[in-house]
Image: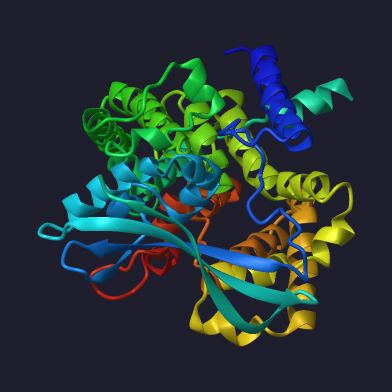
Length: 140
Length: 298
């Protein structure tokens, strides 16, 4: 590789990276938006934590851990897809299958997407969290 | 001026450092796919969540399967092993040269798939691109000493630039995402938000103290903003600056469980690792318990 080619590659990488920051290239990995914790969260807003529970055919309530290993998706990935999930809750079927595969002998009857809601004031946590149900899906 | 510009981007740096940095990144890549970025291995059951990043779309990558993940897993391990042992003089150059290409491609694809399920983490920029550019450096041995050239210097400079850009670029991202105001980001509830999202004993003690959280946001922002200054520093100030960034990562690890190790390891490109063999030789203890260096002096 000649010096000129190296220089061109260098400048192209930096240019793409800068453009990704200016133009919001979130999925330009590996040269995409360096956006972890870059969002200015409303200091007086709410904080949502999404989690997933299931009811087994025996009537037992279980927590479905949102890690790629346990459920095939992580919490943040589930949250990214939340809009689609509300349109089509059957997207949870894949998670049910992966989770049941990792927990032999446990069969799910239904799955519930839940959220805890924390309140912030002046950029700090205040008060106790509330819990809410986003959607429930009966496993087919 | 132009010559200075070119010499900065394509500098002469010690070839031996390539061997050390490549080995450090190779070990990190293996640890990464086993412990941190291990999700590629677990995606085969949820193809409906596949949200390919641009590179994945260009390459027409399908949702990952168990077979693809297994092949990449082996590729990273074989490539990394070849890079690490290939740095020793006794092995043919082909071992490290093939190894570094295999490692760069297998790890790059693994990372692209890992980021293609809806969430992209930015601590993998420097290592992913770094492994690719380091594969262009050619043969490098641990014991190569101070001999320097541009074919070794360019990829090292790129790893340095990518490492620094991880911080400086994130300030730019904060500026843009905050609607053109860093003040807005620094006075936001981002740290409290992240503590609530990832609660632990330590951060729960701090999450109700607004002034502390705001001060920490300013501190982090200023450190990230100052990151390009490392290119102006010489030892020992450079070592001190690197120490500051590593401490920053230690704090974010303790508070948020976010380690950023794939970026942390890229700081090795700033370190004079090529002097390590000489340093060890100088300090090697002789069987009688006296230093070899002292023996020679006597």
